[in-house]
Amino acid sequence: MSVSSGCDGIGRLRTTWVAEGDVVLRDTERAGRLTDPALREASGLTASQREPGIFWLLNDSGNDERLFAVDHTGRARGTVRVQGAHNQDWEALSGGPCPAGHCLYIGDVGDNMALRATVQLWRIAEPRSTDTETQAKETVVLRYADGPHDVEAMYVAPDTSVWLITKRPSTRGDGAYRPVRIYRVPPEAWGRREPVTLPVVDSLPVVPVRRTSRDWVTDASLAGPDSSGHRRLLVLSYGAVHVFAVDAVTGHPGALVMRCALPIHERSSEGVTWLADGRILLVNEGRGGVMYAGACP
Image (cartoon, rainbow, N blue to C red; front, side, top):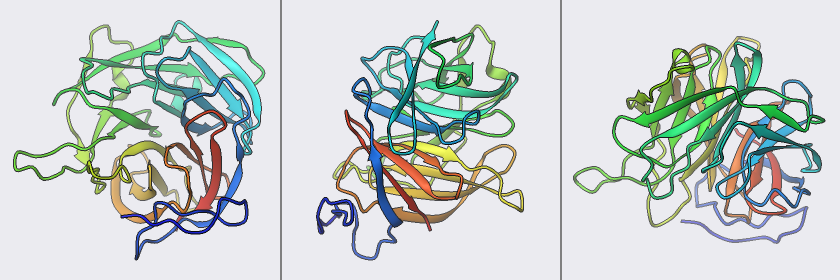
């Protein structure tokens, strides 16, 4: 399904994910590398609303409860410890509106073996990169109506709905692979003491399969409104970015606008966000993870 060409230099990118006939992420360039050695398993990426040019990341399972601030080149700009939260398997991070103004939403939603009966979200007012700690005061416990799933992609709509997208292959009764499923956490879920059950709301035309991880979904990002008030949803898989139309208020995904294969050598892209100029910034998991910028379409 994929081919390899080119070299690893800054000027020419080795391709491992591009198949014949694919539309490819345009003007792809290496933006830099993560410099903080504590960012060992970077997962999730979201642009700061308080500090233009700052981006937030987190580590996934087996790491402590910290958020990491970097610039667009990956240079470390600060670390904030999240008191009152627990990192069982943090895999998603999104920014969005909240009663406090603008918040960071932390998704403890990773579940590689699909064994967790419940997962959890935290919501915190966005800190500054110079802060050293913050307090997680708002949380919601979730369960999926159709059983456990591994989830790494999450985004927040203008009405504060939180949307979750499954990652891994699953099959129907006839053995055919299913498209990824999406779930919505309603705004009124926050503050409930009991777990909130989430039904399947819809699916997306992204179909993970076992023979290749190219379309395993790892992150999502909702763009700000354009001049007409329209928004677009960006969904990242290991081998591509998928751009969808989206309801500008509820965040419900609509039609697929474009799929762009990633012309990069790294095989573990786990964080993506929109840049202010409409381009895309993505980060690869692992210490010293490479950051890329490009455009789709």
